[in-house]
Structures are given as structure tokens and as C-alpha cells.
Length: 422
Image (cartoon, rainbow, N blue to C red; front, side, top):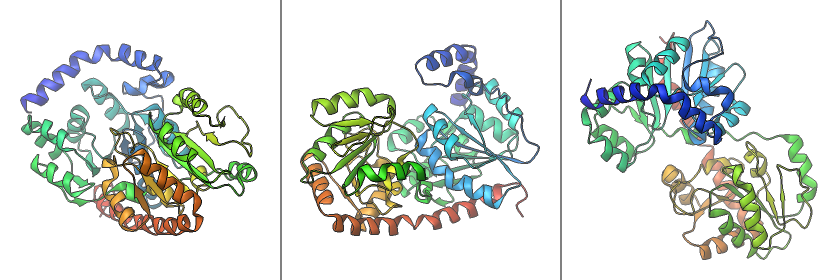
């Protein structure tokens, strides 16, 4: 073991006794689910089934959602396996509770401390583990490897900044990356960085390209049909601080008086501040979480709920994807609206989905804006021209449907690691 990994193990072992207090403090701030903090410590109240078990992990919402098509494919093609799905955030857990197929087990991911990792692995005894994007946990990975668990890192993504950091501990980086039996990177840049750090990359595969269409509550869709009929609808999806006001301003400048903005914040806890800002901007609004009715004169519907983007994308004439306008987030998945034939407007910060956005823009299915004026113009054009929006949306849908090949490739690559593979 490298000196850096040995030091990390000693440090995490020394801090491990403080973990319950730190988790309790996080729970008080809403960062952990109080009733399930024990899962973060590797203790589960769920019995392990007797069948072979595959562990899949996505740290947050984006990574967890990117795994869903793979989870569904595994459920269909290998019903003999039990799937354990872990995530690290409360929001991801809430979404997975709605989306996981029957029989899949969700747990919060264990913290990366030696004894916690040992308890978790001893209880669940996975035959294989699949990590999405960029999860490198030294204690968990190396203990799993020692136990003979087959390890895969799919859609691996590493920034130049992260790569530079790992270069300061090259032996540790090579050891961790060498623990994986399969690495498929999200893009060519990540492949080059991982190979520079000593990892063996089998190919490139972006799991987010395989995203299935988001589900929808048909009763909820019917309930919104009457108050929104004949109204051009702009959806602001997964917005972050600073973006709500920008999109609301663009919407207010449109020349479509009966238009409706459905504003869906990434984190619904911001709803009070967003509502106050809308009031300052002079926009009438209703909040979904409190049951406020959507009326014909409502300008903004503040959809401060979770797991309903599939509903709102089905209603949209155009979508502005959040996480892209103010910088520092890297954008969110534009294929989610594209599946429903909806054109996409994005800001310039799309590092998380750069190749996807490039493909959509090359197809004439998305437009990138770099300031408020350009945003105003893009929103106005798509809201005032439904035929143009429809044509762009059809190109977006065609592009999104290419993801089926991505899912098939993921299954082919993963199959040799699964128990019972010939």
C-alpha cells in the first residue's frame, strides 16, 4: 500500500469514532435522514437476500439517475440477481424511492472509514459493484477488491483539476484505479487523464446518454390540462440560485401574454426565496407544494416538488436547463426534455454534459446563450413560434433515442463481471 493510502486509512480510522456525531449534526441541517443514519455507518436493518447481489452506487441525483436504465435492464435480464442501490444524498434517496424497480434495495452509502466499510461489505457480500462517474473510496474499494468483488467504474469522469490533484499521489491513484476490473470513461478527455494516472480504460460510454424517459403521473397531467390549455409553456428545469430570476426576466419579456413559466428548482427548499423574488419581479405565481391553484392569470407555477420533471416536460413548448447559466454546476441532463420532443435552451456551463450538448446543438435541437440578452431572445423566439419549437423538439427526440445503443453497450461490457457469466 502506498504511503498516501496508508496515511488516509490511519486518518479515517482515527476520525471514525466521531462519525456518529458528525452525521447527527448533518441530519440536524437536513443533510442526512435521521432515521437512517445507521446506514451511513454500515449498519442495515434490511436482511440480505440469499441470491447473488450486485451493488450499484451513484453519489447524488445525476449519478443515481444515470444508473436507472442499467438497473432496469439488469432487473429484466437477470431476475436471479438482487440489486442493492446506494446513494449519498437525501434528494437522491427520495427520487430513487420513486423510481427503483420492485425488488431493488436502497441504502444510504457508507462513509469511507475502515470499520464502516468492513461492516457494510460483510453484511451485503456483493459479487460485483458498479460505481457511476467518479467515486474513488480507498477503504471501500480496496477492501472490496481484497474480498474478490468485481469492480466497475462506468461513465468515469475526471476533471483536469482532479487529475492534477491525484498526480501528487501517483502510486495511490494507480492502486485505486487498478482495483477496477472495468473502466469506461464518459469522454475522451477523461480517458486520457485516467490512463495518465495509470488506469486501464476499456472504452468510452456515457451512461447519461442511456437515460430512459422520465415517468409521469397521468392523473396529475390530466389535472393540469384545463388550466394550461392553449398556453405556451416554458419549463425552467433544475434551477440553481441566481438562475430563477434570469429565466423569470426572460419569460417576462416574451410577447406571449397567455404564456406560463413552470419553474422547477433543483432544491425545493429554496422555494420561499424564489417566491419572494418573483413577487419583487411583479410576477403572479402559485406554489405546487402548498396546493395553490393554477389559474388562467398565473404567470409562474413554482413546482417546488421532487420527481415531477417528467410531468412538466410533457407540457413544455421549450425548456431552459438549469445549472448552466451562473457557473459552477456544470449543467444538467438535456436528454430528459429531449425524450419528449422539447427544444432546449442552455447557458454556457455544461461541463457535465459537454458532448451531449454539442450533439444536440449540431442537430439543431438546442441553443446556447451566454448572457441575459441572448436568453431573452432565445426564450422569446421559441415561445412565439410553436412550429419552430416543434421542429427543434423533433430533432431533439431523434437525438435522444440514440441512447438505446448506449445501454446495450453498457450491458455487454458489464456482463462478464456478473456471477454466472459464461
